[in-house]
Length: 81
Length: 282
Image 1 (tube, each protein chain N blue to C red):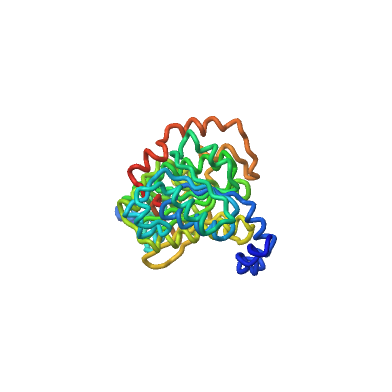
Image 2 (image 1 turned 60 degrees about the horizontal axis):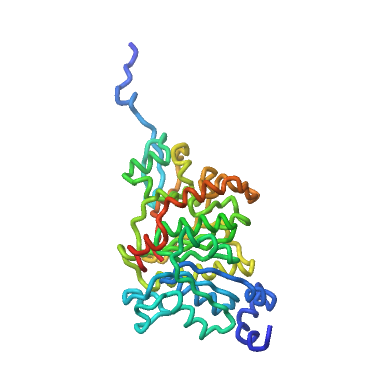
């Protein structure tokens, strides 16, 4: 008799751990940077992103995937003088 | 260099990285400070004191009572007076070797290019996002180095744009596209005088180091957390699709003037410095 795979297992999503502004977050491993921001309820036109100490320009947010151990800094533009 | 100047700048000349030749070269440089508020009044004083030979101060605004906790060049008797003129007059008294000019017209599309092209270097001390985008565009067009700093609440940001020496680091628009939403200004979230002082000193130091040609900090975005007294540093990145610098400069910094019109046309869609500034006069 063949064991039936539990339904839950078929929906299992692998996760990775990244940090956002020094706080650890467990996220699906398939997320792009843009999806990461949206999942955190961050308006994508209100922030800039640094990944592992390098600025990721906005044009790359859709295509650049989050990787285990990534360290993100997400911050708003400051304009006062 | 005459004897009095040698005495005046002796502590700077003592620095191996500067020397008499470095100090002398500073006297031939022209720096433009756009915005003479919190950052600009302090940066202007630092540059004039350090021996920059010529400064142009640009601001149409007047001194207000709420400016005084952080705009240390001004006092109560200056309230209502134009900032650029007031700063010019005060700095000229203290630093007679520095030729200082003031521009009280609104910085914007009509005069931005002509103001920026006069300088060896531009310092962005404006108080609003629209002006920052304009200053960046004019500096990219003129291929002049720009030191841009901003401060609000306990957050400070500073970096340099120099498409000649660091084209791979991009420009202000690469980091903050002009559709970005800005929520933090000094007017709506507040700021402490020392926060402004920290960022202004960094801005002046960055400018002076660049004029001397010393230091290893190009291509870095630096952010200051004034609550926890912590600096963070990141490498800047150029956006190849940036509509200010992306299509105009190869990595070698080669200028391709065929794209200039698109930048001019786009920048015409933005508010002028003063239209925006009227909402945030700090």
